[in-house]
Structures are given as C-alpha cells and as structure tokens.
Length: 510
Image 1 (cartoon, rainbow, N blue to C red):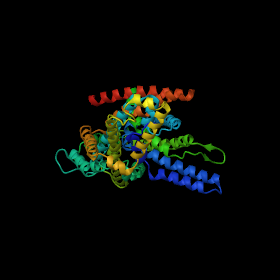
Image 2 (image 1 turned 45 degrees about the vertical axis):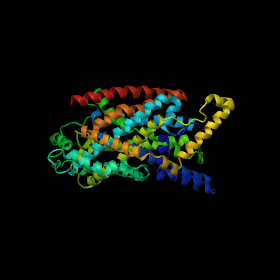
Image 3 (image 1 turned 90 degrees about the vertical axis):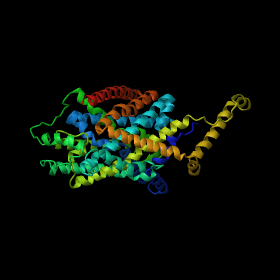
Image 4 (image 1 turned 180 degrees about the horizontal axis):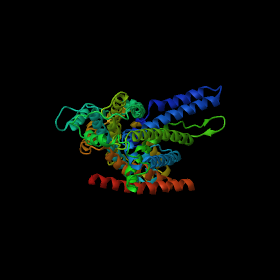
C-alpha cells in the first residue's frame, strides 16, 4: 500500500469546496428519506451534478479567456470555432480516460494514476510539467494585473516604468501576502469570484457591442506600454467598416498553429478533475429507468462543465470579434478606459486574477517540497533485510509494512502532527521565491498571449492530451477508446511541438 505523498495530501484535503461538501450532505439526506426513494435519489443526483459542474468550471475558466478572442480572430470565425469545439471534445475524452483509470485503481490524484500506469519516471516528468504550468499561469496573472491597471488609468504617476512599478506594488500589497497562506481554504471564495467576473465580462462585452460600437475609444494615459501600443492600431482600423470579417485563417496553417496553443490552454483542467471525481458519491444513484454509477455521473459532469466553458468562451470571442477586426492580445484592452458596466467587469476580473494568483503558487510550492522530500531516506521496517526474511514470511513482511505505512499516512492527516512537522522556513522561502520569480518573468514578458501560447503548446499539450492518451493505451479498454487514446497522444504531441516552434519563431521575429 503506497504512502500518500504531500502533493496528494494537499489536493485531497485542500481542494474541497463548499459545493463539494454539499454533495455528501445531500446524499446523507437522501438516505434518511425513504418514503420516495426514486425522487430523493433523483434530487441528490441533480445536486451532485450541479455542484461538480461548478467545480469543474472553476478549474477550467481563468485568465486564459482574456486571450481567447485574440486566438479565435487569428483562426477566423469558423476556423476558430471548429478549433474550440475540437479542443472541448478532446478535453472531454481525456477526462473520461483519466476517470476510468482512477476508478479502476482507486487512485484519485493525477500523479498517482500516472505512476501506477506509466511508472515513476513519467511521474517525475509530470510533476515538473505541473510546476512549469503553475508558474506560467502565475506569470500570466501578473501580466493581466498590469494590463488592468493600465486600462483603468491606475498606474503610478511616473514618467518611466509606471507599469512595472505599479505591478510590483500590487504584488507586494496583495498577491505575495496571499501566496504565503499555508492552505487554500481561505480562498475558496475565489472560484465564485472567477465565475461571476467572467459571466459579467461576457455580458458587459455584449452591452458594449450593442451601445458603443460606433463610438471611438477615449484617450488613454500616455505613460502606458501595452495599451498605448495597441491603441494606435485600434484607433486607425478598428471601426473601418470596409474591413471584412474573416471566416477562415488569414495566413492558412500558420494562423491555425498560432491559435491552437491558447485554445488548448483554455480547456486545461485535467490535473484537477480527479479531485472532483473523488468527491462524487461512491454508491449508485437510482432513478425510475436506470442506475447511474460514479463513472457515468462524472461523464455527465464533464459533458455539462466543458459545455458551459465552451459557451462562455465562444460567446466572448464572437462578441469581441464582432466589435473589431483587430482583437488585442488581452480582450480588456479593447475597452480602455472602461465605462459603465465594463468598469464592474474589469474590477471583477482584477479581483479574480489577484485571488487566483496564489492558487497557482500553492501547488507549485507543494510540488517542490514533495520532490525535495522524496530525496530524503524513508524509514524502513527492519534495517537488516536478511534478518527480516529469516523471522517473517513474505506475506507477513508485506502486512507489517502496510501497518507502518498506514500509521504514517494517518499521522500525516493529523493537524497537530502536521503543524509540528511543517517547516515554516522552507514554506516562506519557496512561497516568496516562486511568487517573485513569476513577477520577474511577467516584467520581462509583457504580452499575455505569448505566455498562454507557450503553456498551451508545452505543458497543456502534455498534461491535457499526451499523458491521458498514453494512459488510455495502457488501459486498452476497447477498440474505440484505443483509437481515441492514440489520437490524443499523437495529435497532442504533434500540435504541441509545431505550435511551440511557431510561437517561439513569431515571438523572436516580431
């Protein structure tokens, strides 16, 4: 029986939300009501699905939506929509493979499933990929904060370096202190803020399209960088009605490869889905016509959750593209300076980005501490293996080892023992280090779309498609599943390589 590592403990204990806990409360309430079991089970099932869908949407939606209209514009209306639908389908297929593997082995962490099926070496690669992914997201969030400060006219009154100084100030006052928190329980409200702010942004963009389409943009402070560079192009060409809206990519395959990584990144949630899957009730839920087990229930959750995200992504992208033929890398730059309800949406996105920033620092820190801890020697049952074999039979040795490991695992969940073992020096050092590293990289890479493109072509392709595809091939469930798994593995690998190469080339040739 393997000992649960700190990263697994972290996800197991800290990713629970109020909605997830409601699942168990609803299930218990359904068990207590025996008068109409079919009605109770149906109500419980619907509540469970709604709560899990909200969790999946929270894990999927994020700051990536700000760059999605830019990538959709590169691929055109129809081309971008087809890419988005293909990415949504691939995401659903990869989640089904992950949940099937987790259900088969009763392992509910991404890294644990990978190690069980593909070995420790693959797990190490996955852990490093998760670390890079989390840091990359934190970098993008810092850039988003800088863009929001610019479009809102809230930069410090400096002649030079106003954007950078303002970003550092917000980081010191809000983002870095939040990153020092030990657990994510205090930030459970961030998922609600994220969903509400993104929904408000879509509505505000639609209002802007209807009311303000023919109004030129207002003047923007001249001490900005991203907004000023974008605004010069926007003022000249955005409202030119003679410019046709593109249905297909302007530059063919190159435009498709430029658009793919951001769209792939937008749906990357596979690392967190097993925590949602674990929280679903283990017993079957009955209705009048069928029996729904845990895996089928998660399949419904995936269908609805990915569908909701696809609708929000498509809605914002089409609205922004209908507003202008020159979509900026960050959609918020289109509305600078914000007015009316767009001010509310911008403030909401700022709050969502700031509170979501530490949600990327936490797993990055835990991944580092987990890798460092594995390098320490583990406590053995008996130092002398020869003596052990002489005194105990093989099955007795395994049983004794299981007892020791169960005691270690149980003690690791004890809050008192956990507090005593926690190394606050390492906690503070790695929290500040990862947070400061993210800020420093954000100051050097001011374009948010570049970060999302690099993440989408590398870690998102690996974690979201290649690894699930390899898991599906290992499970070899049936012929259809095997074909889909090979499609995810080969397609994700090819797209990841090509899109990363195109992103690097276009970045250095600008």
